[in-house]
Image 1 (cartoon, rainbow, N blue to C red):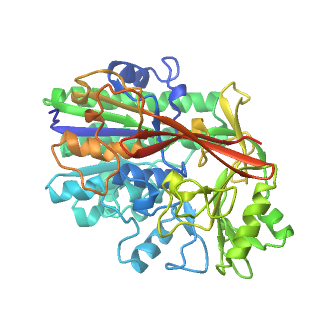
Image 2 (image 1 turned 60 degrees about the vertical axis):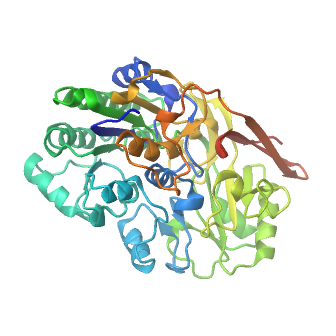
Image 3 (image 1 turned 90 degrees about the horizontal axis):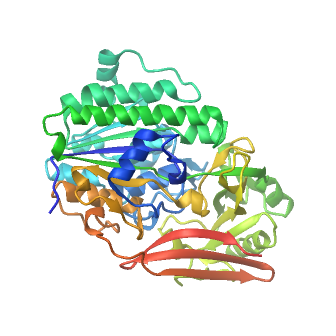
Length: 488
């Protein structure tokens, strides 16, 4: 049994594993090469930060933890607007209306709190992902710092104490060089050497932000990747200086990948023209609307009056559009959706009580972008065309960084089998000798050994000229989405 004295987790938001090279990120590339890596690791669907963060925390798919999108319509909380899980005020409203059960599965932090163990989080992402990594942080007696300030964490004293020690919070610039440095100083000068929690987790909001607004392969993005890599090197050095360094496990991950956007679709306007008055979630006003739509390169479509005939008409309309890549509807069938030609939510672990009537994915492919990186797709907006986007089922959105080092890399090498973000929570618990709860669908990475890749299956669905396919890899009854696309 491999057991660590402590675990340090470093998450690089949006980082694609094929971009971790010795020239771009030498510290991280060296760590991965010298440790135990999982090159086929996958995130969940939707491949969005708040969804993936919840899966990292709970070791489960959205079907169990209930965060079914970065934004989603949830009438039990409010019928006035679509909940935006990046907003602190929307999270607070959901927590109040749901009695603290916005995330509906136990997290690794919950389990560790019951075992009397400590968790410290240094976060530079949105209030939503800061919340989701340890939603019950105050009740657990844990500590979460947010670089965005006291309003964006459930333990505001963590921010107050760090500002008193390290000075004012950094200005918001793009790329986020200052925020990377501030978060790193807290980790290297306080959390690791002084707090020494059982689990210390740092979440860098780069390269995700720069991928979105400065493009995946630009010089600015390459510079911020080097900055994040240098931060990781500083964290490794802080661990090396501890007297128990040899007993500390290090886990590195990303929450999702990204692809570049190739064009824009005004989906709400097109739906309205087709006879279905639609509002995008960002409008925050659903008055007079038949549909609420979330966007990016995929999203949900909620039929506000519950009219299933309208849902079916919208699904058929989507499948007739050239811009549509994939369409999902709820179903008891494990593969086929209720509407002929669609896939079932169950196929991608989205079958929660909060599931939407429709999920669409805009068309994408594996063509190279302007910087020679594979993966292009359409978007509904929110970033400039050419900027990065994620949420869908393109392999470069789904593939994530995942590697173990330090004390956890007793058996270094490459595990080519199925793995994913749902394995992070069980691994943390296993490293600390704590049993994972039954709600966790992932497995400890320490227990995967050198087993082969596992069976790969490709499913198809379609109606008329619309054909879509989804490739999954199975591991002990759990499926990891590999790649989805439209075929015709």
